[in-house]
Image (cartoon, rainbow, N blue to C red; front, side):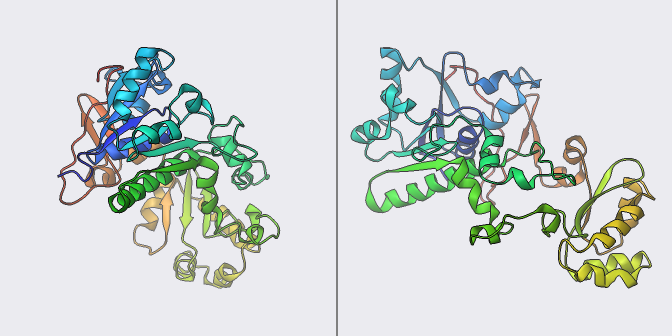
Length: 359
């Protein structure tokens, strides 16, 4: 039996954090009603498309039921209340204040359904100096300090490849809702969780921003082991203009690689503090330029070194590991990324994403 069978979720969120969280609930058997404006979730119109739907939309909304409502109309309001009255979880992702003006804020919902777990997801939370500041993922990362260390060798921050604030908020919201569902078993009452992308990101800096957390200076990438200041936690260009990554800083990997390269004399450089390994980084940069990426893959095959080729997404998704673990599945002519959470006792099967208003 699916872990969340019998749980009813009313989801008013769009784009990424909320839909990702409620899809994870749906993957485990929750009945999720995706409440959309009459024009639909904007993710529906995001290219590319496969089998008539946006790949983005399908991979964040499978297994849900779509209800299209005009929440400014009496009929739309009545239809939403009918769903909320029997809901276990209500999720909304509007800017602070909007849901209250629509008449479906936490106070109104809990007055009618005290068992409901109400989850608000926003950029900066429902209160605070930034609460009403408009922002998507990158702006949140910028204000939280993360973009400052997403920089190149020249110190210029670059656009992040991963929407980490969005994803952190979705995962944090999932954890909070599941905790609240467990708590309700003891109290019989629901709860309210105010999830902010900003708040959700901050714990992710503990390993790099320790000095700043303690009131000291901010981290600089060139002097951080995790951000490019260490030779064995770094990215290197190869002869064909591609790249490889060294991803293990333990001394055994330093010794194994440098011995295999006949430069055991450089091993002590790998013990220097981050930011002082420039000579070793320089040696490795020059060395890796002598073979193509795939030649290095073959060369490293029998070496005990934390090494990886830098793959693009097409290469990564075609790798044997994806097939071995069943991480990309085809359903009704379209591809879906399988859930990261799968239970041995359950047989997860891919499901379609709903057409707008299909119920």
